[in-house]
Length: 221
Length: 232
Image (cartoon, rainbow over all chains, first blue to last red; front, side, top):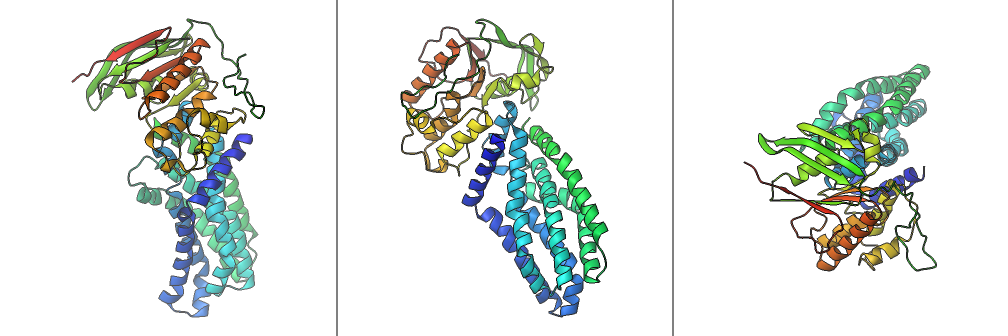
């Protein structure tokens, strides 16, 4: 536990010093969202219909953008190699990365959601649904992208490989999250979609840290 | 029980390490008939290497002779193309976890993050090694880094970065140290201090495997040199 806290502190310090790593994906998210009204026209009804898909696709891409550099520095400077060789607490290392990745990319998306609702003319019911799906969905996005980052850490041009590898895994989340938001916009219940998202999140939380550890081990040996 | 690191200072905390079993001469690591092939070139074959408690094994050889490849094999990071590795009379693959838990490996890369300060890098490795907090300022002062504690490591010179990287040897409790070119970029005084520290570790029953081009200036009680020939 002490180790985990200390690793989280380290990651937070790094985030504070490398602001571009998490600010750029957020700006990307906002810019992509503001491009849609310009591209498809500022018609309120049209935007409201498209909003669920737009929000979630922008969120997927921005989380993906943030994930790419996640393990790069620690791989290049040998931290991961030395942690693996000397059997040091890799699980804490991975959990610290996961948590800080969500804090720096997922949580800001949740906090930005009122702005998004304004931009895309989403009404209250749809906004609540968006908030809930982002709260449940962004941790899952972080988990999947951290796994992708661990798998591609030793690849030279890892970025595009990461996108090709991880975007298909986002599809179930995209389907259920935007379905929940659509249902909410039509004032229909969306508990079912949220329950499935929660189930996917719990499943990923249980298995992905182990997968990340194996991927890191594989990449240094 | 011998403290690894004592500072005569009322503020400092003395670490009492959990001592590893000390049987001088006990065989720790043994490699039999090891072979390594890289890009269709045989780096070495039928190589036997053994490391005993209290022994320093120096691996010498030209650039490209396979020193680092051998170290990665010994550290369990790579598999030999042929041959067996044994740890304390067991096959290494059976006791890989115990072996790794008794190993401190510092490879070619420093293992320090350039954006973090010397102090933060040391406390990361201290946490990773699950060693209690102690006076890191005193440790850094001992390593000649007084006054540079709060500067990001990317601003330090190569030798200073190497000192930060090697700092964990002063608090680790692992018995076997595998170090790839530990003297690179260090000045003579730092090299001497490091070798003096090696002697202390060996006297406690530790064991060290290093690669280096340089002749060691300190005479170690039990030193073996393994010369790898460059093969075509």
